[in-house]
Amino acid sequence: MKNLTLSEENFNKQWVTFWGNMQAVNLAEHWDEEELKAQLKVAAGALSIETGLAYPGALISHINLFSSIAERIAKMVCGTFPNVTKEQLLKVCLIQHLSKIEMYEPNDNQWEIDKRGMLYKFAETEGCLKFGERSALNAMNLGVKLSPIEFEAICSLDKDGEEAKSRKYVVNILTTIVRQANELAYAIERERFNKLNEE
Image 1 (cartoon, rainbow, N blue to C red):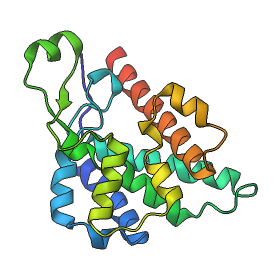
Image 2: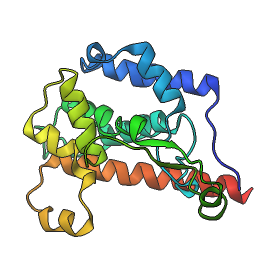
Image 3: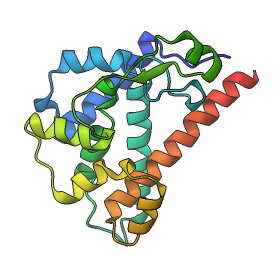
């Protein structure tokens, strides 16, 4: 089974987009540029191969794709929901998945790799936090200020199906855009992986 890869040239393009967005919304000042670049170069976006995100560099690709989709959705609904700003949306998109840098690590269990396609596993981390919560906490510890709505949107994928359904009528539009953009990005990435393996 073939897996996607990210060439050095493609990573550098992805980095220019990502870091440009970080600078545009005043997040860059909170992170060490070289350290974050080195981390994202090897960071996976998911645990299992069939997601299309279980390879070094997949995380930055997902963040950029998801951010781009979120911006397009926001533009489509801005006449009805003018209160979602581009800065607020990008801020949430850029922060939401960064905890995966520390939460995922290469799997050392060959059976799981061979039989289940689990190329990565969860790393040992302090506290029982889901990835959105950990991403928000990490950002706040670096001095990023988050509004309650931004915090909610960053943590929006942490809720399981039933909890998300029970709250769907009380979530803000920023959260809705972020959830939908993630779902679309994940679907695109899975389809790219499937097409690669049809060849």
